Length: 156
Image 1 (tube, helix red, strand yellow):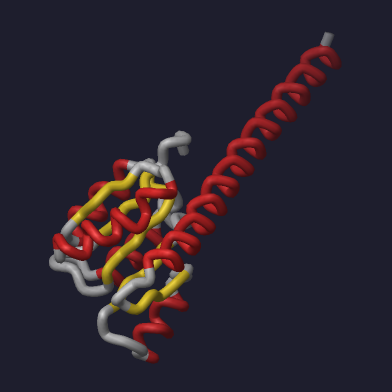
Image 2 (tube, rainbow, N blue to C red):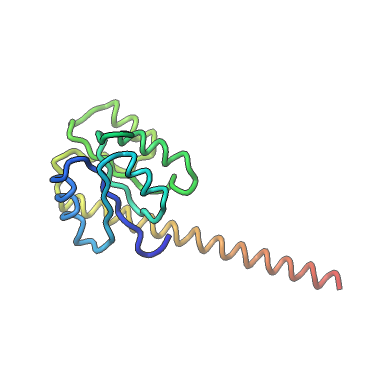
């Protein structure tokens, strides 16, 4: 993941998109937007999404369907997701979200301060995870190269 990973905000109401962007802009991370689940999936699959802020009820593939799909793919399964809902407490939705590994289920209207705090934490955690994954890959490559060199020296 490049340092400029986006926070992708998905909501079909333009006013909500604007409010969410305004709440998250002070974090200083690039923001992306989508108004349908299908559009969100396309952007996620293009890569470079570090956090998904997703309304449960969006046209096309709904919020839970988007999460289900991303969890099945290795390249997207670890993107943290904050689901937004305007329907209050719903035990079935909570259970489904938890089962999919959703990081947080947030009721609308959203408190911008709390949203910013949670989103910032999840975004940083994802970037740290990706940095550790890259470091592991580099160390494995170095170990493999050292092992290959040792085998070559032993042959001669």
